[in-house]
Length: 118
Image 1 (spheres, rainbow, N blue to C red):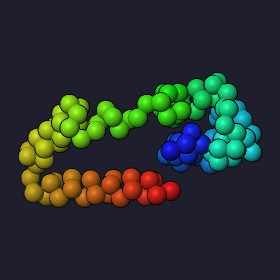
Image 2 (cartoon, one colour; image 1 turned 30 degrees about the vertical axis):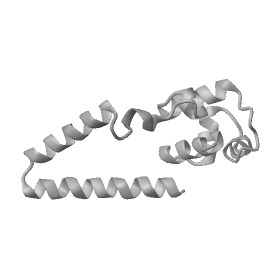
Image 3 (cartoon, one colour; image 1 turned 135 degrees about the horizontal axis):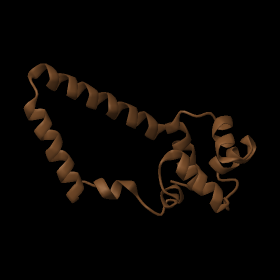
């Protein structure tokens, strides 16, 4: 994934239009358009920092230097702890709430898959 694609995904995850996002990071809509389409490849670092701060991430992740999936990759310690926690929660619920939990998980998965396709 390119830097532009990451910026576009972050903007969409925030539910912001290009105009809103551009204003928040102090660039023109046209400049943001060029960032998102990788027309401008040398984005000033202060803009990368603003994007990261606005989206609650790090400049390194915006630039693709960190893969957030590494911390929750299948088989990782964190992934095992999260899975164990979720199974523990599931085991404590009655059948009705288990169904609600599964429904919520399916909704989240569908939303994630739709974002991945966008």
